[in-house]
View 1: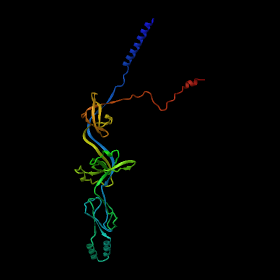
View 2: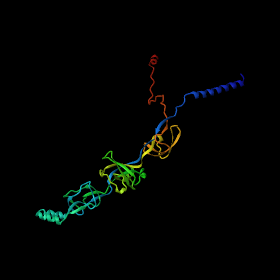
View 3: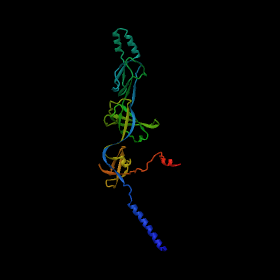
View 4: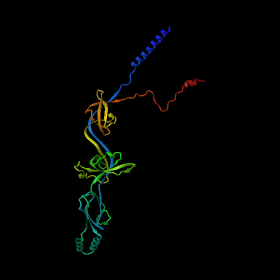
Length: 331
């Protein structure tokens, strides 16, 4: 066999091997097909909130003290009553009047009546409009000018502690919803009236105090809100600041858009064609769809399935069993 024949033979053999390899690969098992998961757009109510905790406190607390030293004669008001500025909420005798009346009781009855009419008691007057939140005196108690008789609140508010990472999102007159531990299941409404400028360190975290005025109904003016009567000073409140609230919003689950919001997102429709959705805000479970889809439209999300390994993994490999028969046969 000459040299030329050998070259032709080896070349033909090489071409045959290449063609056979290519053919076998084409006929072999194909890779796994791309899997998709269906997701449908729906109309629902969306609410984006910032959560905080707080307490019900007086907006301004006023302590009512006696104008003179003496003895308390009458208490004309009880805790929880609302009074107007100038209302008489109690009566007291000065030290001189109390001594004179005590002396007159040892005389004739008409003398006691005379001195009571001549020497009138000193009235205790409400200094402001508000609610009596504390009564700290009883008739017959001796008092001086430093004794606190009553504590008044002009209005009850909710003071919430907001983390410094969220304080930039809070705005005055923002709508608020809050619940009270004493009334589970009942939701109250309100509005932000004041945002604190000085931070406080609570549990190694900087927080700012935000003041919320509660209301039974949404008022025209934030200063003329009707506070629910069930609220009491010192109650614990769980506060939700409403950044965004929309009823009947077109939405899609968060997982379908990989948690994206406020941007465009590429997705595949029923025909597996690319579609751009314009996304809005998310409430943590669903995100609003501002454009690119309609209610009830199906989209397909690529998914990947991992094949289980045929090899069994064990943390401690098993020891091979010894062949006892062979061991016995050995001398």
